[in-house]
Image 1 (cartoon, rainbow, N blue to C red):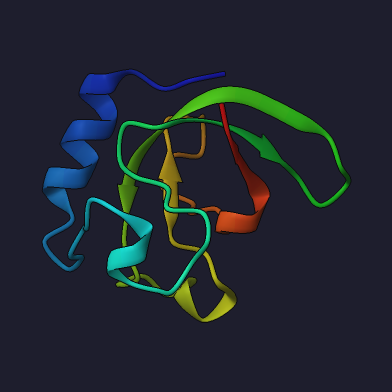
Image 2: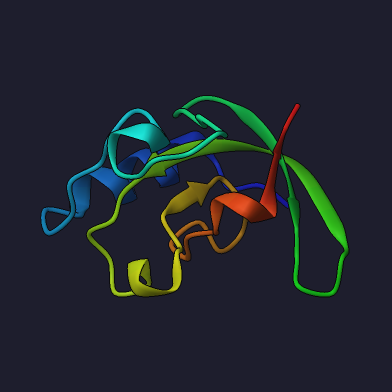
Length: 90
């Protein structure tokens, strides 16, 4: 399930403690240059695939960055970032 654009935009604007970037390559070296606005499929740890979702933000200024989580999607848990390797561009 996806979350509305209004809800996710308001959440991003409210996060004064985080700096968001437009591309994953702005914060790490990568061969998957995911960017805000891209459509992706999400694969969880059990191998189940969900989506499509839209990338709504990319940031390393969150407590989950140490686990590699930095890509935010417009899914129900939009506030919980995904790892780039869990995403497939479509």
